[in-house]
Image (cartoon, rainbow, N blue to C red; front, side, top):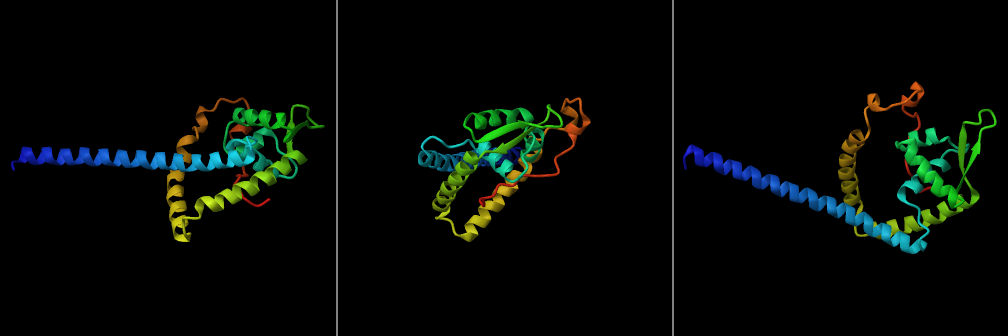
Length: 192
């Protein structure tokens, strides 16, 4: 085979291997999406349609981790989302009677958010159902499988967090305090 033929063969090999990698990545993505979707459907069925969205559950858990209540700004910092995203979730949760907003006595512009007793009871029920489904869902995997899966997902997740966060210079705000990252980071837990 001459030099030109070798170059064409090498080029073809790279194209085939790139195509195979793309197909594997797509299959992995669809597998992850499908795997989590199946569990979400089972949880919604068990809750009878009263299931919170994953974002709403994150808001409730973050609020329950802080006994004194939080401001929307502090909550958005804990969850690493925009205040607008938090506001949409808070509106839905307030409508359900799961949280309440109270204005600060010192500064009427400041709003504190707390989980209501009804919200706490719902979260306990949701956690129990979620934990039971989690046990069933991961039953086919042994501890080594779970460790490997966790490691792979952590490896994927470490790149996506950096990509999602906008550069501070792109954030438009009037208060420099808004640009400081929250000192508190929320980590979901199954414990009440």
